Amino acid sequence: MEIELKFAVDDEKAFDALLRHLDLPAREFHRTVSQVNHFFDTPGFTLLDQGITLRLREEGSRHLLTLKAKEEITTDDGVLTERIEEEVRLAPNIAVDVMRGSLSPRDALAQRIEERNPDAVRLLDAALERAELHYVGQFENQRTRVESVPVEIGDRVVPLVFELDTTRFSDGRIDHELEIELDSSADAQLAHASISAQLEAAGIPWRSAPSKAKRFFELARKSS
Image 1 (tube, one colour):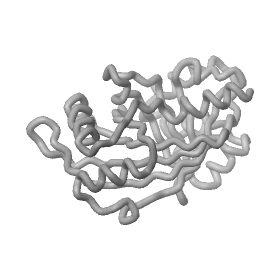
Image 2 (cartoon, helix red, strand yellow):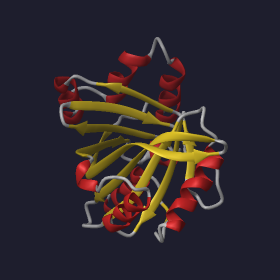
Image 3 (cartoon, one colour):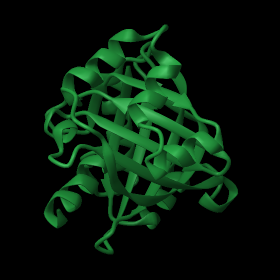
């Protein structure tokens, strides 16, 4: 289960203001990685219409193929979301085959998870109903990770990973957001309240951030 908080902010300066407020080193002292996110769907956007995402992410030498089920929004402001996720790492040559279309992303995923998680394969197959997948497109993202950020959640201080994403879409749009992934042991509602309060105390305006995949597919569907 992927449990995330996603706060859209105006720019990178907002993230810098949050780091100063939390008395953490400036952004340039933290790790930044470049990501290229590739997406697959049927020509009629069958997966999109069912809230399912199939993505191949390039991050340096790593290639991650990820299946995400329909997103459930669990707070009124739309910031806290939950969804089932299955992710596998592909060898570079396999990733190239998937992107070129010589290997179906469905088969690449199923070969690696069918024994441990057949339900995920069944979910994908039921959504596709034998329709063929094809390559839809990509977007680039710069992600800055700030690890071990102490956050009060209830009566505990929990170290969380904060990630600033700067995403460039095909129409030239650039979005910025703060993303925090929670594990199942954390009280997600309390974490949401705590981090919202930190942003308010730092004077940072924010709004909910729909998933990047959703924003990407809005553009893809318009241009299809």
